[in-house]
Length: 182
Image 1: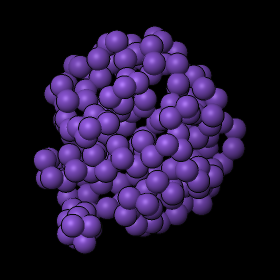
Image 2: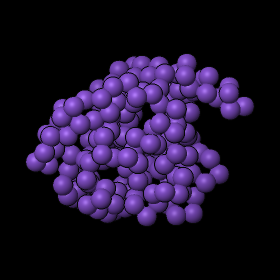
Image 3: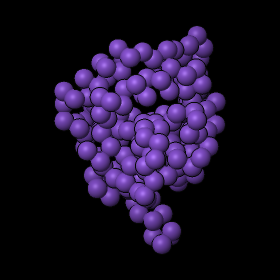
C-alpha cells in the first residue's frame, strides 16, 4: 500500500520482495557504521518483516519499516518509524549508498513528514543520530528539525562510547514552514 507519492518517489509498506534489496544495502559496512547491527542477514530481515505484519501499522510503542521507492529504480532505502504514542513518532532513515547524495533522502523525508503531520496528524516527530554521522544530522537540519539536545557518550556501540544529537519538529513548525514555502 502506498502511503504518499511524488512523481519520482513513493513511500509504501514493505513487501516480501523488498527483503533482498533491504538485506543487501544493510550489509554494507558504511550503512551499518552508525547502526546497532554489525552485519544484517536475510533471516533478520525475514523476522523483522514477520513481526511488522503481526500488528496493525501505527500501533503505539512499535517500530515499522517504510520502503522508499524510486519510480524508475525500485526500492532505494527505508524509514524506520517508531510510533512512540498516539502523538509522537521517532524516525530513522537508511539509504542504499549508491543513492546517497542525490537528493532522495531529503525528498523522501519531506514526503514522510507530509504523511505524518498532514495525514496522521502527529504532534511531534523526532530523530536521534550519532554526532559523527554528518549526513544524517545535516539531513534533519535541512528539513527544518531543531537540535533539541546532545547526549555525551550515552550509548556503547561496537566497542566504544558514542555521543548523539536529538532533533525534533513540531506540527506547528511544519505548518509555518509550509506557509513560508508557498
